[in-house]
Image (cartoon, rainbow, N blue to C red; front, top):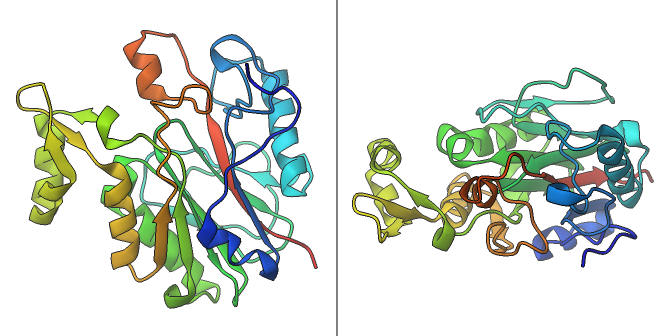
Length: 264
């Protein structure tokens, strides 16, 4: 049974290490929301077919946990792109189309939404610059992680000081991909072959998105970790696009990961 009281997000030990600098973060689960049915719990997906009033209440609860007003909980219209933007004030609708978001302004809780893709949160505690990226396979392959880091650097961050953490996402055991997917990764870099394990289906493979993402972050020069929680397997905690697809369900919920510079 899902807890219908308040959110209780997961946290990263790397990002916890900068909490004393006034940086608060959370990888929100399904717990603590008001949605029902397929969306039971804390569905924050404005693009879902859930009751908009319930989604709004769920987002209000996330904002309250982050210590900001609902208008300062800033998510993007995510398009699986390598694009990252800098924000310095709250915005309304329509949301910017991008997959990375960066700020140096206290009181703006920037977000990445997901339901199998990788939500990555970033922080440079000395420069007080933070970032969030939605890194599915396409965004990670085409450079959204590096673009988010570069955007942070343009407003004062230094990559050798940045810590980054990948939140709950689909694990290798549940991520079967086809031959065209494999070929695209190996054509980009032959070393990418190491992220694929044998699959029971001929010509297919199991893809390790978690390790791939952390390795790209490390190669970009930041300290990185993964929470290693599987959205597909842990149904009581997480929404999953792929699980919903396998069950032929009409829709699915989304969770959010968020980070904020607290106002001193």
